[in-house]
Amino acid sequence: MRILLIEDDRKAARLLARGLQEEGFVVDVAHSAEHADEQAWAVDYDLILLDWMLPGKEGIAFCGELRRRGVTTPILMLTAKDAVGDRVAGLNTGADDYLTKPFAFEELLARIHALLRRSEMARPVILTVGDLTLDPHSHRVTRGGVPLSLTAKEYAILETLMRRPGEVVSRSRLAEQIWSSDQIGLDNLIDAHISNLRKKVDTPGAQPLIHTVRGRGFRLAAEEDHRA
Image (cartoon, rainbow, N blue to C red; front, side):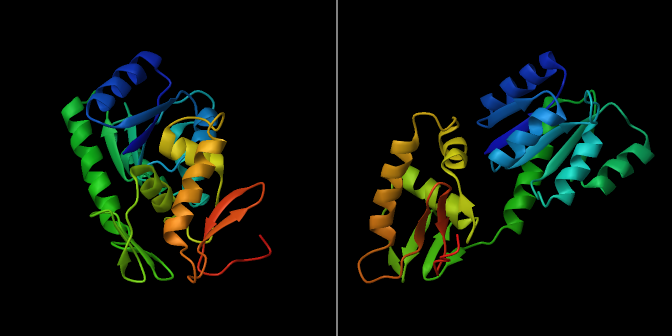
């Protein structure tokens, strides 16, 4: 699970990130809304921890922007504001939960897990594109009812593509999502994994599902859109 932590207090951010990493989360840290804006679009996060009081653009304003732009990632607002009106404002702006500072780390963890469970329940139980299916819980993948044996990286790439059917997913997004790194030096590695994945998914005689969009990335679709 990957979390974006947006907190301008660098010491607090460092301590929170360390605690969450010890719990098994991958944590990216941003210290302003402007910095976080790039990351929120480059990576498909499972959860966003957002401090209300940020330099420049406040967290509550950034939360509203994310929701207006269609970002559905669960957002947990962190703030010292404890008035009922503030909590209502945060929730009405699009936050999924609200935690008042100072808080116990155990309570933060409990709220994170509750939001992740709620988000997982809202996702499709089985991802389907054409006759290709992927079960995120069992990690079972089939094409035309026939099970496919994928490596961990092949599975991660396929799940990323299947969660955005018909959309172009760039190499840089795959690099960030799966390798927790930037694109530099990974192009050939990504292409090799895509090639191996395509051999398993798009077998001879089957309708091609994995499409390369030159200069942009890859797209999973039951029918190729030649205008892409």
